[in-house]
Length: 236
Image 1 (tube, one colour):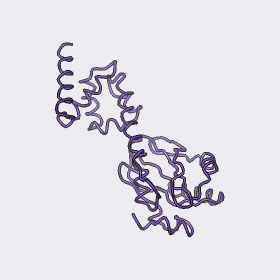
Image 2 (cartoon, one colour):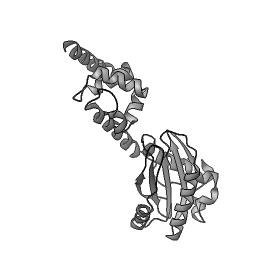
Image 3 (cartoon, one colour):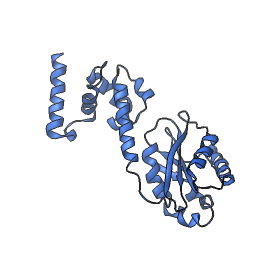
Image 4 (tube, one colour):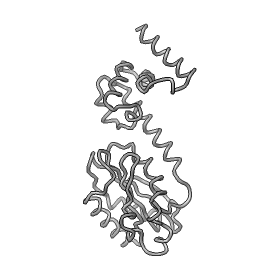
């Protein structure tokens, strides 16, 4: 017990005196795990870095994946909380002003989606000048499947009085290439929005820090004038 306490004190001292750069991922994970009950911090750090490869990958994992780590105890919630706080901080730093093309849309959506372990769809509602009105997750699926909740989508559009919408979802275990199902869903959503008098400007598929804009592949998706002129799909 004394050796564990001494080791933790030494890690704290190095962190406070020299900063996090002086500690390896495993040592930082050990230091963090020590703040939670029901685990051996050193063993937890070994298990986490062994399973996920790095500390950033560990905190990006979801609660379900963390719970599966042997002996993690209460540290699972702590690491999940850290990941959630990081993602929330990143989303607060999204682009200001208009979302005028896929590059700006990517800046907005990637921080929201890159750390999620399940497929999730976000809807960004925009006014006539393509300024954000609201952004909300409307549905969540499994690791590789997503069922779009069209009722939640329609309700969100009605509440915000949006003129245009950009949707985005993630491929947690894949690459940022739209599937046949993604393209079918896009066509269905575009039709639904059109019936509501709203333009679907783009659908982004996100995988990690990478993304693909479906409007960049098919500029007709960015809608009629004047919105087409404001949202330049060629600007990726």
